Length: 323
Image 1: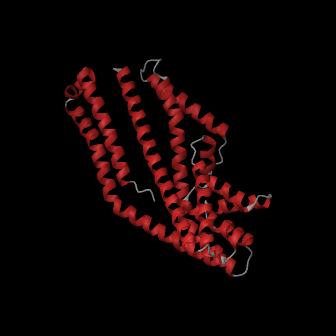
Image 2: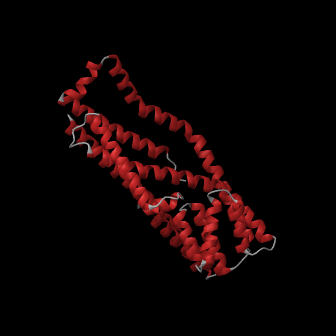
Image 3: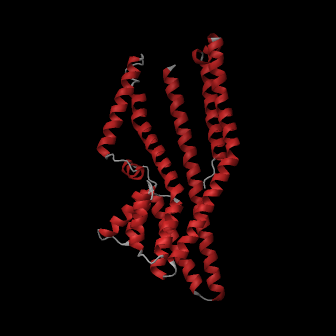
């Protein structure tokens, strides 16, 4: 029965990876189509009535948007150093690898003490050592990015007030780094220190996008780079950006409130078969043991797990609004 169970887990893992890759590719293709449509729109406007200053500015924004989007896509790589950089943890790669190996050894020892054959003990050990630390890092990164998005508009307001009062942009950035909570303050501090050691503004913003690859930071980088090349009222531009970000946050909160009922329904539907199976096992174990002891029951259990995995992934895609 154990080889069949191992085959079942391998098939489920392969199916989940394939569906996730397909969803990711569809999101990237949708982004590329939107960027191409925006480029064609800007080009058609410029060709119709000559190349005005507004059209040139829009084309420059489009070019920076493409460049920074490529930068953010590169920052989304799932390498361990990249994840550690985005997490903001004071953890080195050597410490992460040592912790992962320790976790794998502990899980393998527990599996061996639980009676699992020695040849199969490396399977749960490898799964725990490779998957669990990365999942923990992604949870930390997701929470850190949520905190950054929550306080970023307030940091822009501080920056706008500093620029309008006559302070240089560098001094206003230092004030934001000093007054803003984590993680907004440390990210602005990193931006100041990058420029202090001789980096250009573009290089500093690119490194900032590697550390914090969120849309809000991308908008901020575009505004600073465009203002550096074309000039203009930086305070008014940042004020408008702050209003846009607050509107995005309100829309995101509204979407979360509207979709909460669908998420609760999906959680109930997804957990109901397992709850019923556990209840039947407690009431009549012999009735459920046929699924594990007979080959026909194993095939039925495998089919049920496959369909449940597909259904859960489809429900997750339906209720997960990529905003």
